[in-house]
Amino acid sequence: MLASMSEMLKKAQAGRYAIANFDIWNNEMLFGVMNAVEKTRSPVILAFGSGFTDNTDIYYYAKMLVERARHSPMPIAIHWDHGRNMEIIQNAIRCGFNSIMIDASAQEFEENIRISKEVVDYCKIIGVPVEAELGHIGPETEYEELLSHYKYTDPDMAAEFVERTGIDCLATAIGNAHGVYTSEPQINLDILRQVRDKVEIPLVLHGASGISDADVKKSIEIGISKINIHTELCQAAMSAYAANPDKPYLKLQQDVIAAIEARATEKLELFGSCGHGEKASDLQIVPTR
Image 1 (tube, rainbow, N blue to C red):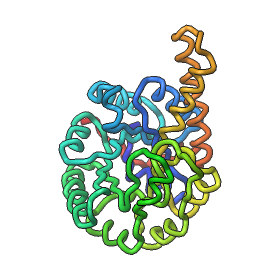
Image 2 (image 1 turned 180 degrees about the vertical axis):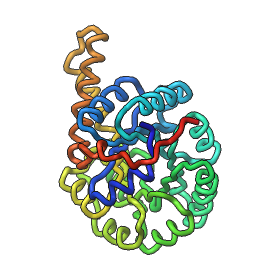
Image 3 (image 1 turned 135 degrees about the vertical axis):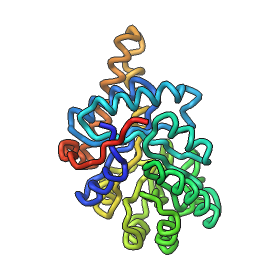
């Protein structure tokens, strides 16, 4: 069923587990993730963003995501990831996304608030929950280089940011990064604890592919309720291709789906969401626009 991300995350926060946000952009990813979701009876967030539009036509793929969600017994939100401006956000909503992230984290604090609040004001009228980021993770790059100018979430600014924007969940910058980590991730759990003490809304961890299971579990214990995964799905797919380069593509595609399903299952189990999809009878069901 197409469900409210906000309600899903509130239940996860209360239950001390995390909802997987899988960033996906093709059929193999969708089928593999949904196989894992329905076998483990997990709620899930299916996400897409501007970085995938060179590979996938958003207009048609969004319809596929929405229809797959509507016909699943599990609660599913369709999420636009890292929207940079109102035009992109509005287009995503027109395509059928029922939750969005506005990412103005590269801007100064006041400008981040202004842009995020503008999006929240627009989205609340139509019942679309909004995620925003405080601190700045930045684009994919060498991890060591990223850390040299990393903008961690400021716990003292987090409460003001949440109050003034009215967002539904907050993406944190605690040493996490997008893409492949070129050295061991340095996750600052102390900052996460301080942010958790300052704000009440659900917290989000981006760039979780490659973060140790131990740090993921600790992050959930502290208060992370949504965890983004993309790179590890790509790595699983590429490994399946590499293992069977001479297979007919029709059969190879099945191997890729199975590999993505296995990796997604590992994440759902790690995040503690297995079985919680069956406890979602009180979640708000979102009508198709």
